[in-house]
Image 1: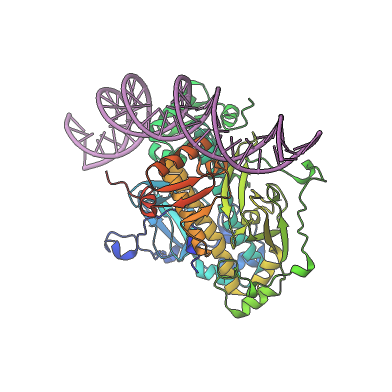
Image 2 (image 1 turned 90 degrees about the vertical axis):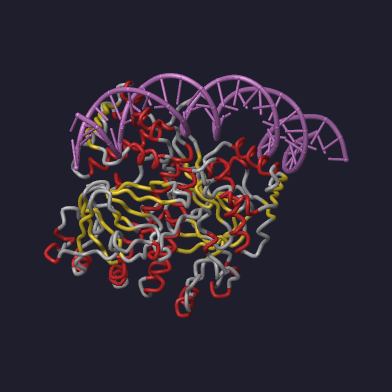
Amino acid sequence: MNLEATIAPIRLVPRHEPSRTAAAAPTPTPTPTPALRTLCSNCHLRDICLPCGMAHPDLARLDGLHFGRRKVKAGEELYRGGDRFAFIYAVRTGTFKSSLMLADGREQVSGFHMAGELMGLDGVANGRHASAATALEDAEVCAIPYGHLSELASGSAEMQMVMARLMSREIVREHSLMMLLGSMSAEERLAAFLVNLSQRMKARGYSPSEFHLRMSRAEIGSYLGMKLETVSRTFSSFQQRGMLEVDKRHIRIVDLDSLTRAFEPKVH
Amino acid sequence: MNLEATIAPIRLVPRHEPSRTAAAAPTPTPTPTPALRTLCSNCHLRDICLPCGMAHPDLARLDGLHFGRRKVKAGEELYRGGDRFAFIYAVRTGTFKSSLMLADGREQVSGFHMAGELMGLDGVANGRHASAATALEDAEVCAIPYGHLSELASGSAEMQMVMARLMSREIVREHSLMMLLGSMSAEERLAAFLVNLSQRMKARGYSPSEFHLRMSRAEIGSYLGMKLETVSRTFSSFQQRGMLEVDKRHIRIVDLDSLTRAFEPKVH
DNA sequence: CGTGGCCTTGAAGAATCTCAAATAATGTGG
DNA sequence: CCACATTATTTGAGATTCTTCAAGGCCACG
């Protein structure tokens, strides 16, 4: 009996290795610079990344894995839909988008990832990545061999729990995006997007009120289910109402409250 | 440092226990009829449900858990957003919807679940259910104590893998819904929905071309991000074009091919 | 200093929503 | 078993939101 049928109604384009030009393709195997091995316990991101919430024995075990780092240039893909799944990736620096591709070329951006966030968990399901990850600026990631990780987890209940939580968190995150796409207006979507970005900047020690967007209007639009022109117009509208100052990709949130209200209960 | 910020931009209404009327609330603890204990290895759903792909030693261990069954009447909630998370549920009979609630009362249906499908994995993240599950008809579920399950998984790498796959599959499923909500037209959405339903019916041994919808137009609309009137009109349009026969909730797919084409590459 | 990519803005058009009304199906209480 | 309230669905017409198409400006880069 076929379980496939219980998952996706939508046929995404499977980009299998053969269809790639071997030369241009990004190596699926990360090439860790030997000098740059990383210990989670030392990492400045340890409180918001994979080891978040881990106690010492497990953290030490995690260190035993010696993740390879990998640099990714702006515009480069870390992996593509259809690639064989072997690693999950933790962002060290830079920003990524993940995206799905429909057979006719339509792209749907399914998330943006910044320092400390994990990418690639969607590959666990079928052993192949369902989405692609592309660097929006020069970036660096830790490449975590999933096999080793789950091996390691088999020895520790706590570690298993952390992994399970991470995946579940991804599910919850997507829930929230579904809510956004399914039942919110263009203004509400953009407001929700900005407030979320602001919170994530804050959590990383950056200003929550003034930041630089790493993604284009088109990418924001794809993520939020609207056209780039609509994104641009909505930005302008927010600015005119004094909620925001926008200069290309530089954003200053002037009135966070009204921005937050923009996607909250409208009492009728 | 606050990791919460890395997840959801959208504030869902947290329905904590205190706010409930104790009498009317569905018991969070399932009340298994002692006579009706269930063994996975015997279950007619074993090939499409939790134990799918499990070999014998693990299957036997799974049997050791003795899931409690629980009957749920049409319209009743199995759990709500905010409820403490303790069980995941496998549908035995009937159909469920899961849904998220925004503070202003807007509901977003995030999935429909039929026999063999699992519900509740979103609760792993925070120990509370993020969504609610409501029976669309009289139904019965297996209530699987998550604690026991992960305990059991800590003894078996294969079992861990199955669990991880299940969660990842949920992520992929939601990806696909995002694609749908983010970049498809009303017709494409409904077509994708119907084709998916058809496949799931088929996988369960029912006719893939003729079935009964368990959900209202409004629920379909919420799931697909459109208004119930638009759902109704799109059904009518499909019918006029000879792709479908619709009589209220009874559906007969006349031309599966053109329905499939309705959400596939449009060559320009 | 010209070129291409990205962003903004306007105007017209299309898709979808809102409001409204009619019909059918279902259940309720007498 | 009937009269009546209730709910789900369909359909129409007008309003609204968002998209499409088009043009122009800005900026980085070679």
